[in-house]
Length: 69
Image (cartoon, rainbow, N blue to C red):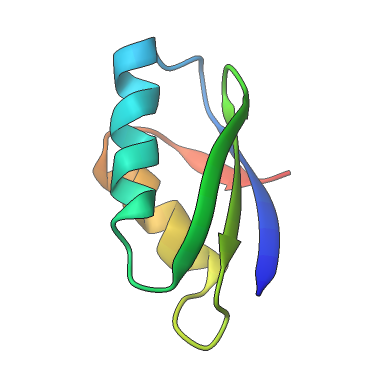
């Protein structure tokens, strides 16, 4: 398992952050997701199943810009 800290551009509302967390948790290969700040998420994922770009793409699909920290 790999871990990556992803920053979300702007500060999503609590509802927006909840949507992001839910979308990431739903991905096949994601073991754990937690918000580490108002605009940051720490994701533990299986690199055999997902790439960091897959995680960032999922956040973008929820309407937010994101990138690795």
